[in-house]
Length: 124
Image (cartoon, rainbow, N blue to C red; front, side):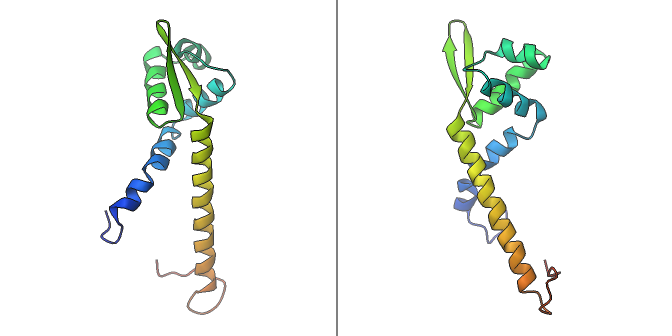
């Protein structure tokens, strides 16, 4: 970790990092899309939709639950999964804020380049 980055900043971004990591696999994105179209879904439903091994789907579901993007509740001998729309919305908002901040920072580089022209500064 860089010396000028304080640990509390890293910790503050951990939920967003976990959410984005959970969405880094195409199967998990498809699982969210599938489950969001239903009130709740069990692992067997997702296996049937994705045609992946049950163990693979279970692992993907676990990652999504740990990231807070899916909620799980027991129902008889199985578990039902549903999208946590509040958590997903929060992640989307945080990502939009990050994109906006990065865009503003990039625009500032153009405005404050050494020669005053609207060209990117090369001192990064």
